[in-house]
Length: 253
View 1 (tube, helix red, strand yellow):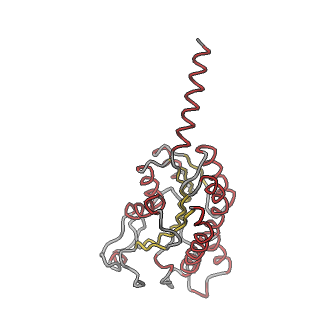
View 2 (cartoon, one colour):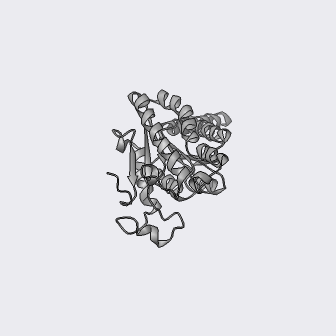
View 3 (tube, helix red, strand yellow):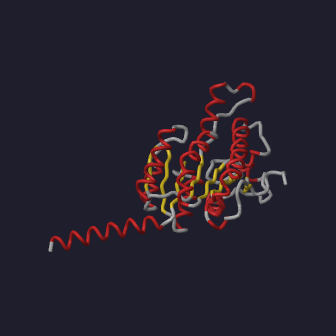
């Protein structure tokens, strides 16, 4: 009798592992709250298993809510990023989609920004994209493809003195995205940027809502649906692009 129970137990474990391997997986760097959390919920509704990272316990709470896994850490710390990727692979054995959503870098008057703050902006905005790409690309090559989406900002192509370091380094992310897509597109690995406008997950005064053609802020859920579109096979012929979702704030066509 004990032998039968043992065999059934082992069979159930193997069946669970097979089902896990058949389920697509989305890894979110910066998935604790705001647009990252909204994207996690949207990807879960699309059937993806989830892993996520943020500096606070918010990612762990969200992972518990969405039946995923989480690791506390910062996108600026390579060890934390490696730990998230290891957790994802140990749990699911695959990574199909990656969303990178980092916080806002230092601000200030253009030439008054310190060298340390420029370096910090580089470490916050551009380096995590390159680091994640270096590690997940071989995984996606073995799987036959995948999708990476970098959430940046509408000001990437219309730089603002209000956000100088962000404007400089987020346009660099778009440049890297285009180069990456040219290099790895033939292997069905896509990378795009989502450039959101003013969104309700930020504590913004009404004047920012009036800057959009729609005269309102975007909801985090609206931005999440666009991110999910780019992460999924629904956008299978889109790569190397910087997609603006700003309600018409920018004038560039």
